[in-house]
Structure formats: C-alpha cells, structure tokens
Image 1 (tube, rainbow, N blue to C red):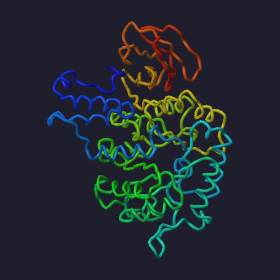
Image 2 (image 1 turned 90 degrees about the horizontal axis):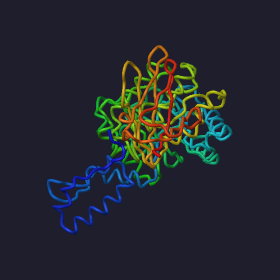
Image 3 (image 1 turned 60 degrees about the vertical axis):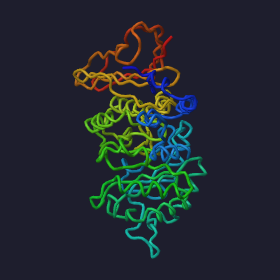
Image 4 (image 1 turned 135 degrees about the vertical axis):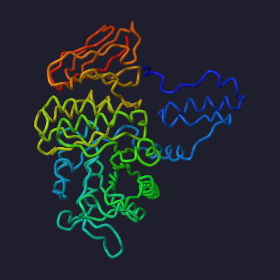
Length: 426
C-alpha cells in the first residue's frame, strides 16, 4: 500500500497531448494540490482525448468555495446525551462551557441542536416555528448569543414529512422556504435526517435542500443523515459536506466498533469539503471504559470523521476533558491533506489502522479489540513505508517520542486499548 501518491498520472498520457493540452494538464495538476483525490479523478477524459469538468464536480467545487468542510467539522450535538430534553438555556450554557473549558480554542465550534426544537405544526405562512415552551426567545436570538461566543449554531431537520421524533414537521417539499428560514436565523449547520420519507430515494430528496441552502447565500454546512442506506459516499460528495455512512451509534463498545468498520469501507470517497460520518461521539456518556473511549476518539480522528461531542460538556470530568482535548490527536483529524485513514491489518482482533498526513507523515493506531492483553505490531509494509526507513515515532496519548525506529512499531495493549502514533521519516 502506498500512501504518498494520492493522484497518479499514466506516463503515456502526455505523449498524446497537444501543447495546449499539456499546459492545461500542468494547470490542473497544480490545482489538484488543493483538491481531494475524489475530486481530481474526473479531470482527464481519455475517451475524448481532452479534459472534462463533470457537472457534479462543478457543484463540488462550489461546496469547497464556500469555505466549509476543508477539514472535518468539530463541535457538539445535543442528541446523544439529551435526546428531546432540550431547551434554549441548555444551548446557551453549552456555548458558555465550550469556551470556558477551552474546547472552543481547540477547534470545537459548532453548537448543534438536534430533533425536538420545533412546534408540531408550521405557522399560517408555512414556516417552521421554534417550540414556545422550550425556545421562547426564538432561534435568531439564540444564534446571536452563540455567535457572540465566537461559535456557530447548528440545527436539525428531516428530508421527510416529519422528523424522527414525530414532534415537528420535516422539510420535504419545503426546502426553499426552510433554507431561507434557517439563513434568516443565522444558522451555520444543518443536520438533515431521513425519517418519514415516503419511500422516496435519498438521491432525490437531499439535492433540493443542498440547492436551497446554496441559494440563500449564507454558508451553511450540510450534513446528510440518511444512515448509509443508499451508499451516500458514492454520490453525496456533490450534495453535502458530510454524509452518514452508518445507522445511529449507541454508547456501547459493540456499537462503536461496528460503526468504525462500516465507515471504513468508504474511506476512498472522503476528502476536502466532504467527509464520511460514522455518527457522533459518545465519549463521556458513561457506557464505555476510558480505554474504549480513547480508542473511539482515536479512530474517529484518524478516519477524518466529524468530531461532534455528544456528552454534557457543562459537567466534564477530568478524564473526559483530557480525551476530548488532546491537541495531537485532534491535529490528525484536522490535517490539511484530508485523506481518511483506514484499517490496514486485522488478525484475531489485533488491528492496525493508518493513514497519510501532510509533510510525509503517517498516523498509526495499534488497536487490541480482543478480550485479553496482546501485542500488536505494525510493520512498515502495513503502513506504506519502505523497509529500510528510519522514523521518529510520536506517541500521541503518552506525549513521548521514540527516535530512530526501524522496520516496525509494536505495543503490549490491554483488552480494547489502543496506541496512536505519528511517524515521521528521518
């Protein structure tokens, strides 16, 4: 496996190109430095002997141009901990806590309200209405409050007749109106769910909201939540900035690892402006051990998944804060190269996950998913390094460095524990 060749060009192509085509190729190669591998694949049309920018790629480029999703989003979402028990005071207090805990300074910027924020019915003009009993000040005032903290406000709707809680309307057939409403409130992020969908394909239901959001003129991160039902990784990159590849996560070990595995198969499709989403973080909600949460956070970071905290950050314990605040692990998630790491080796639940980073570095996770203590080893061939390469290995959780490591890296790991490294060739 070779990581450092993200885009490869066949050597015989240039021999058949005119001088003008060669110049165009040079320009496109330079442009591709700022594009993901998925957005660069369609630049050369071998059948016609020229270059073709496909319609989806034009839309894709527009998504990048709005400044959103150049790295996976970071923030908080209300659902995993609070479900429908939300109100405006909680959102304000969470925004305050995001700043006071130092999480905002680490890059966590979105405060996302999930389901159950609205009244059961639209108003007389067909507009969505915040629930008077829980959001009496309205969403515009709440957005203003969040923005004053230097943060961004996210909201939730559904590409169906009702949301999943069935307590408020969905946006199916109201995309333009609802997008304008969200923009007028100052919304920065939309999670768009998949319930009550009339059995209409998500490929038909999600693009209208994408276009409607674009038409508002306000940059709004568009998060598709269609649960991976029609392999959104293969088509959603022209529609949104992230797409769920899995069903909902639960605060359990088996749920977490299954989401990691389901998401892993789509690694090739993620990149700058559009990310695979194995669902939100459960770190700190109490259903897993510290080592399991460490693995959860490590894998999500390596996989370039959105880092959306799902616990009550107003009441962080020291361990949870330490896990969520690891700058070195966050840096892997936010690396500008934008290539999703993946599982590269698995033997009897002893796994190696790895992915390329900028400046020729490689992120590596050694993960013991077995029920007993074991040694996990990553050889250089597993992670795309030449056999004789000497590296500096930085342990991101121990915050220690090994110099002149050659051939492989290994660790004795307790059950369900992991080690995470960034290796830098000398």
